[in-house]
Amino acid sequence: MTTSISGTVNRQCRLAARPVGMADPGCWTYTDEPLREPNDGEMLVRVRYISLDPAMRGWMNDSRSYVPPVGIGEVMRAGAVGEVIASRHPGFAAGEHVLGIFGVQEYAYSDGSGVTKVDPAVAPLPVYLGALGMPGLTAYFGLLEVGQAKAGDTVVVSGAAGAVGSVAGQIARIIGCRVVGIAGGERKCRYLVDELGFDAAIDYKNEDVAAALRERCPNRVDVYFDNVGGEILDAVLTRLARGARVVISGAISQYNNSGPMRGPSNYMALLVERASMRGFLVFDYADRYGEAIREMAGWLTGGKLKSREHIVEGLETFPDTFLKLFTGENTGKLVLKVADA
Image (cartoon, rainbow, N blue to C red; front, side, top):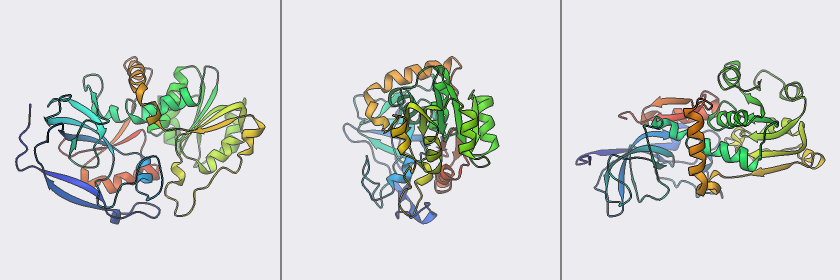
């Protein structure tokens, strides 16, 4: 199934400048690179779908983090799923589908590091970027391992209509928790309750979050899965139950600040309620991805877990599509479909 690559050009989106605040069009440049045959130990992947994630905004900053920043002039880092079209790697064959950090481009070379085979017969390829990908794994380990959620707990999830939050809330419901989601807008809140089975939702754009938490969490909050930080984190801290666990998955409300990030001002609630707040990275659980994917795939096929992808087509749309993550335009997992996929 090896595909002829003679004369084929790879369209790539590269980081041209580091943003201050939101990433404007001047942060990006497009280049065309001719393809070559893979070297020994390499494979060539035709990228089909690209994952757009809030963490990518942090990768654009020249600051210390859990991974090095994307360099100026480098292809923008991104997870993606695609098809092997040529291989000189003993572990991968042409025609197989794979998931990895392939970047915002039409084709990618890989030595196999961090690459996982996926089966499109089990789930559509975009699902491997959402519920069965890094967002789903983040939700799974964040809720069950870091948050230690258990049946009977009241779980609050912020960014609940997004890729991570929607899965975290559903997993909490599956294991028998009472689940309250925080999202922006009536449409998203209806989606959480009517389609995903959350017990209640809070519309942070049109409600007083602190007052709504008092009403919808009368027994306070045992686990808070935080994807947004800022004012919402502060509000939830005032409603923690004794021994509560706060899981720091992200802080999307702060990623585009031009100044310092806002930290929690109500952190003394952790002392009063003997609660804990812990950050984590999904990569810490890499040796257990298989078990999590198997369990979540079972929930998907059994109808207990729903996956929703917001798919936008065209590599050239990346600069505008990426901003949807920060304007609240997407529901579920935001995915960029390469035009010829």
